[in-house]
Image 1 (cartoon, helix red, strand yellow):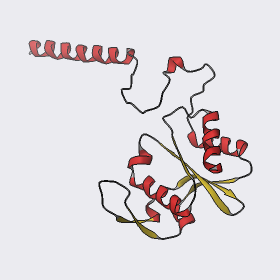
Image 2 (tube, one colour):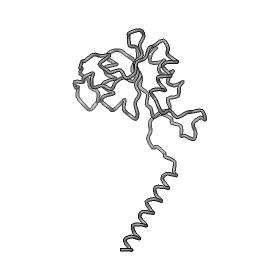
Image 3 (spheres, helix red, strand yellow):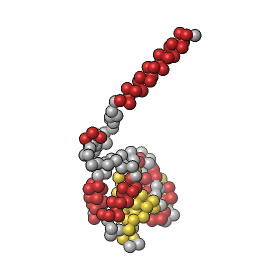
Image 4 (spheres, one colour):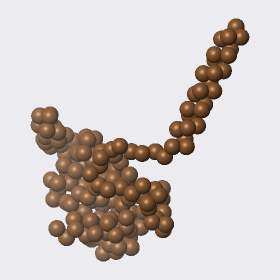
Length: 172
């Protein structure tokens, strides 16, 4: 019984040592996102970590685009109505019927007066390219003729970049 206890203690100590070594090593991502991403040590000293992306973008929209009124979390049906339409959202799937109510609510909708003029969507990872709810939202925005601007929250999204990209889409 003491041999078993010794073996278990040794395995436990090895596991704890292994976990401690993993915590000391810097985390390196091997994903190739196609965009340059700065490592934390390379970021400028004034770069703050953004914890609330909705508040960050709401502040940018309010201060840099005061000519537009902004609504948050707008259901697709509020703009498109309770309709359905056929589309091929994935290259590997045939044309299918999709309902507006299935779409992810638009994170921000910019209005001039009562008319919507653009949509800003926030998502993470590949949500804009893979998740059917985002694809349905984008499809109905396109059918309505509205610019659909997506931002990935895992990317830096520096203020100047966000402003120039929104300007580009709204003035296109």
